[in-house]
Image 1 (cartoon, rainbow, N blue to C red):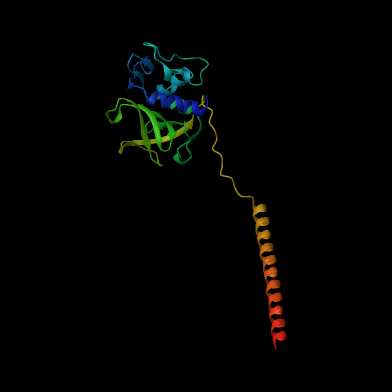
Image 2 (cartoon, rainbow, N blue to C red; image 1 turned 90 degrees about the horizontal axis):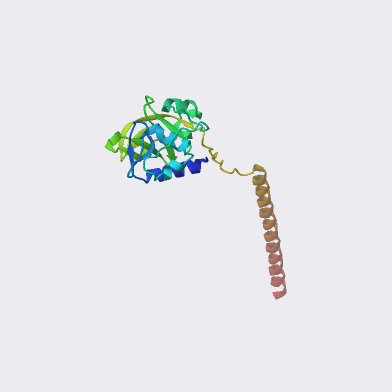
Length: 212
């Protein structure tokens, strides 16, 4: 799926009634009629295994089932990161939709852009899927309460990421052409004004001579 489709799945889940549960099968999108339940890295696996349909799951008792054709196996967060590409500890180059690993490898989330992370957690006593914050150096927080640090990120193998487009750079050739044209126009205007001024002065002299 594309990064936009993946982010849309996370947004739908974020806006549903969710709960944290780390017992199988309740940790892969189990729906009990009220809550959709996950744990941290099984949130990502459930989206991959169900090809995104888990976000719209309203069937009581159903959950995401492992699909052998899926990109992710039944892995831990560390194993998922080991199968990611462009893995880095530099948080300045992270893209929306990238997988995040918490220090100690015991927790995971997904960066969704603008300094925000979607994660299923029991931290801060919330016990659900939340939108938390990440600083430029990876510090994790929720409602301005800091807790630990995200230390690694990578691109998930089932997500197609759109590369950020570089800012268009001005063509130096065109810049020089524009500068030369400006200089030419300035010179042209100067001589045109000089000619008009000389002609005017000459007329004034003739007028003075004829008046004597």
